[in-house]
Length: 51
Image (cartoon, rainbow, N blue to C red; front, side, top):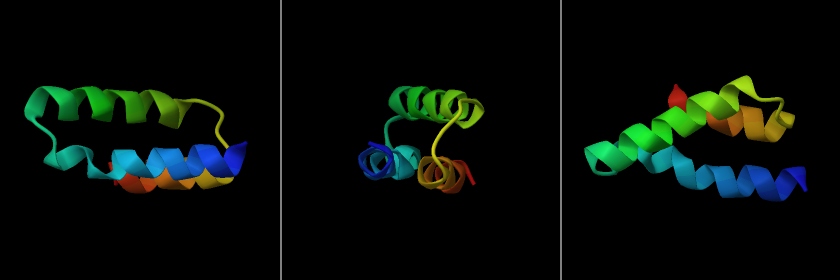
């Protein structure tokens, strides 16, 4: 379900406040997701989280 996926991705918007190792892992995951074919809502959330 694209809407549910987008809502779950919003948890990654706080990756900058995580401890350095966990933050780096979350950022790497977001970058991999940015290259994947996502729904428009999910792509927007990933882009905002990285931006």
